[in-house]
Length: 135
Image (cartoon, rainbow, N blue to C red; front, side, top):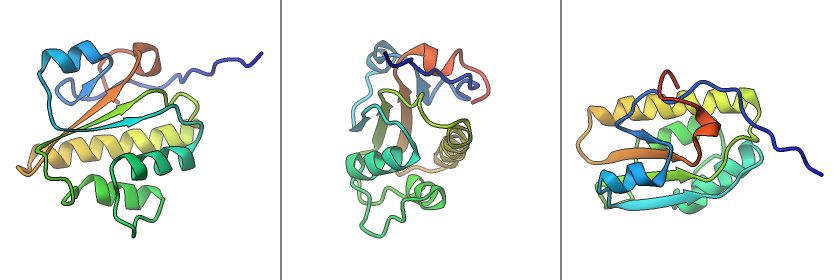
């Protein structure tokens, strides 16, 4: 029997851009480009799924720096709203989780001052991230 791994990580930083259930997204009437990231077990699976679901350009380097660069671009997506929904990232190592949440925070802060896109992150299940606070 496989034991389910949960992350004892801090929670999201901005209630306007991070959601923990689909009802929250529905209540906000969000429409746009949606990328559903399935359950991932490690950094490489996460990067591969993000690249596939978000149709990253072929030059994507499959590393954290390249992810941040493309999260702050999205010139290839015409929709104003971009929704990135994660099924489960609880199997990421604590180090990778910490880096990914830092990238998300930087991304959210970047798009707050831009007009081309609104970027939203969704994490299924409150047990993954806990209550809203510092991500």
